[in-house]
Image (cartoon, rainbow, N blue to C red; front, top):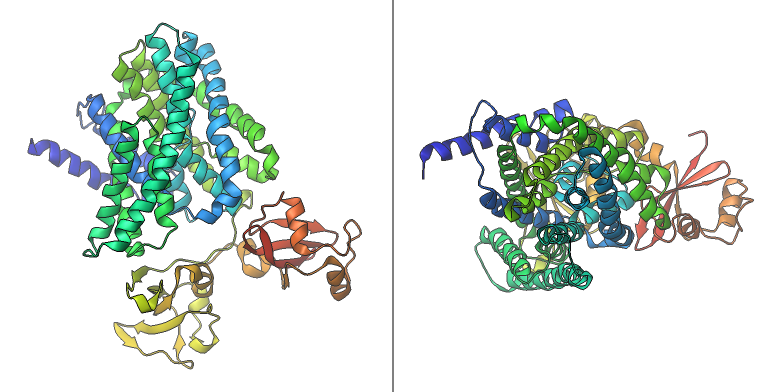
Length: 571
């Protein structure tokens, strides 16, 4: 192996990592930085490195996407499926088809292509990208309401089978001169979804059993999970199913079952996912020749803007209107139709198949991704805040350490650094409102561990060591959080001064607070008000306006609001 090549590869990784803090300062997606570094090191940039091995790139890209989807799946909570599964599947199936058709029509008009080639471009750029969505949602400190975040995460993790099916079908039709039998295409679609879904779920349960039954050195558990995930991915592809869907579902099953050393697995996989994204976008940047993008810039911009401002919004409106989304939620989901690595990887299919105008297809897909990351990626966080789609959330622990002792159950040792304005004033430990089934193990201050007592005061700079279960994390994070949130996300400003039970009746609320709700019967409960307005799937942050007050969903269990905040109009 040429040491110069390994030196260049390591140098690209170091440069990308060193430049990553620019992402938050400039408001651009970190993936865009990786892509630009790859382009700068390519044949048209100062690096001058020629890389045109498309088959090797295809292999590396598929493995990297597999690792990214596995990590994203493990961080997707199963309870989010109750609100996000049906709308996400509509976007991942019918939505992808409509997007491909609309984009194909624009590509046919702009680039004057054969209709099959134009539809192929539409299919390649039809799916939102899991790597981009997971990176931006999880890396920008956004805590969106569950209906929006669940829909976006599940859609991006499950829409690849339809895009792959359309791409392979159109490549086959172009190679056959336009002829294709419908039943063959239908079988391909069923295999992509059916085999991918079945093997993904079964594989996830097998991985869970392996991790829980076999005693290993702690550091080997993350490697077992990633190796088993790649086995599921590769085996599904070999059987003609969607490996992307399979490994995502495997991750979902693993992340929602009790698994030994799970915090360590997630911590290691976070690093593996970042490494995969780095390698993927650097390599894709190397593949492209920037000088070949300039001649198609005009048509590419028309197609990209049509996709962003017309095709995606119309598709979202057409598929999500039955599911109770409000206008702000629909607007944000329409905007987060991020294109990332998947369209570029799908654009390698025509090159490997050596079909006519394959290079043009590849460069158009790359240009669309570039515009999407610049336009949508840089504006996603500000738009979410402008549309008020965030909900109050606490900070997670700095470190989570599994106890791995049967008597401890699923308790973990969690370290919470106390920081922010809230902790500038010392507070006694006895006054902290901590969740049930948690305990303070110790307080670290200036490299010394102190035994906790109710009278001991803690302040900014201290680190609390807590015994707690993963279920208590959201409430614990809020109790120990000191971050300075925007005023509208402060607890009282967001939920109001009064907390009511979801079972409380409107009539009782009228009597206690002297309010009249003329438009609704008094025997209706507050929870039923939310169920009516949200079509049965309320989430934290949902609001119901009733006369002079606003009801805000404060806590939910399954599909029922159990705690309600009451805000007066003058708040």
